[in-house]
Length: 286
Image (tube, rainbow, N blue to C red):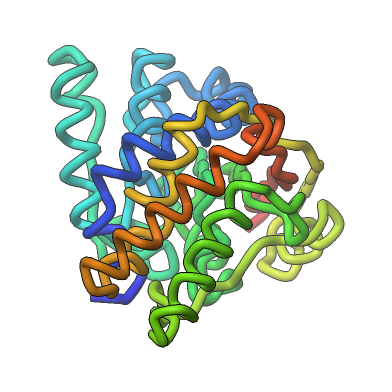
């Protein structure tokens, strides 16, 4: 199991609760991008690459009544959450058209997905997490039929500094310094990281062999409530860091974080994060 898969196995339920709703609007916009492909092939096969808690895969299943949807993810824990969500929200006919598969985007054939078997692939906030994005793009391209389309959204390289993150980092660093404790080691393993601009996204897609490439930049704007912002860091984003600490030190970090949050104005809880979205086609002539 990769370090990234292990990270998401442990955080699957908190991801679905704390983080997936924040990402959902930007992720769901990908369905508009691939709408023409699905309209041209009503019984299309659609892949949600890095499906996570299944939000996008379930939305696609509900939106298009003949499309067969596959949610692929490297984390078995995330797939447990996705299957449970599907079972509780979709009807029997919808469930019959949705499947979840454990496997890597870079090596989808190992998960039983056949080359040139997918009409459209979508991927939201995943391609920054893979160890090798060129390999991931190559894997997705192999899965697409000639003329098939990929659409994705990813973080841009430079994000606006967020006061909530600074509050957590400050509380952690100051508490550890007073306690004489070393900072927790990073988790998750190597990752490709964000794409810095639309032009960089276009270049990566062309290098991976895609044609008819488009990319554009936008901003994810999300006004957090105080409790939701706190939960994002404590229960999901920095939970692994906190779990490495002794209970007394962890309690001190949380107290310092709460105090820092109390000093922030309401406007500080709004998050603006730059994104890059893109679409590309596997050449029909292949």
